[in-house]
Image (cartoon, rainbow, N blue to C red; front, top):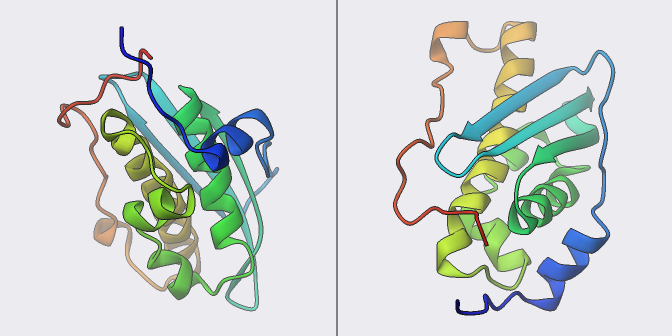
Length: 148
């Protein structure tokens, strides 16, 4: 089996993930999963003055999924909600100095869990209607086996 090449930054965030945990009674909560590879990410946020004041994550998945969750929380903390909504899967992968192609779907989950938490908060405060929140589906995406 071929060895997957991980950047030092991916390894650092996997070995020493930032912002791990749960926020009790968060302002926003996002949960996304990929049944094909078994990854599940939860993101909890508190909001102050329309900014991500605190953010925590809980991830069940491979090393890439954990590194992505850690990086997403670092990238979002302190940003306005609108700025945090602009964080893309590519931004996350770039910040981690790349992910192996077969692990790119993990970066989708991180950005999507963040966006889901923000949308959850926006629904609570009446900025958007519940029906405006589209469930992100990650079932059946190309090339996504987290078994490595």
